[in-house]
Length: 227
Image (cartoon, rainbow, N blue to C red; front, side, top):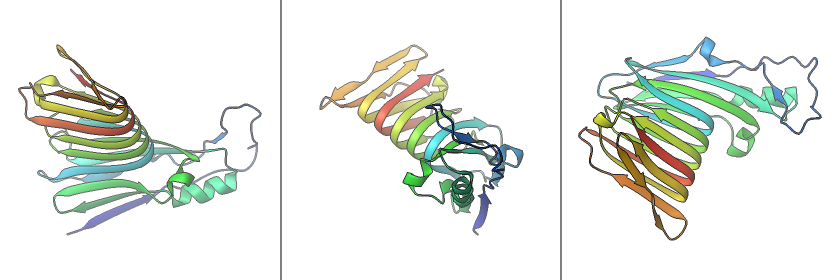
């Protein structure tokens, strides 16, 4: 059975008093819906995995004692007229699907080029017991999980930070095409090994837990903190 939930972000912008700033800082129009007022909630059955696809922006993912995925999103327009802001934001959607053995949440509706005109801040809470896979395009990603199940991350450009309890982890495997990687905390300090001058890889496989963490980043810095 397939259940789909689609939440479209509504833009509530008044044109009055909005003018381009003389400052070099971007101009933001702040009156766009914040979904924390009506978050997207998706039930998760035990044994299902959670898959997140977030194309651009800043994203925080954490784990909790829950049987739902909770997604909150804030969007602001950058250097756009109120009319164009309204057009772009109405097309941006959070789409959630439950299919078979996974629950998928993805951000869609705009091309990467147009999405760069928006500032997107997301926060997602997932069940502690659910395996998690994350795909992200460009931005900053922070993940703070319980480490009970496997975590797999693939990211193109940005900074990736992962926090996880050491006692829950079996192994960590990090790689980056251009940038740095490291594993620290809980008596562990693993520096990246360089390959071909640009790439780096950091691996640790001495944990007593069951969770495997694997992350690959194209360009940027990736780090895991064992707590």
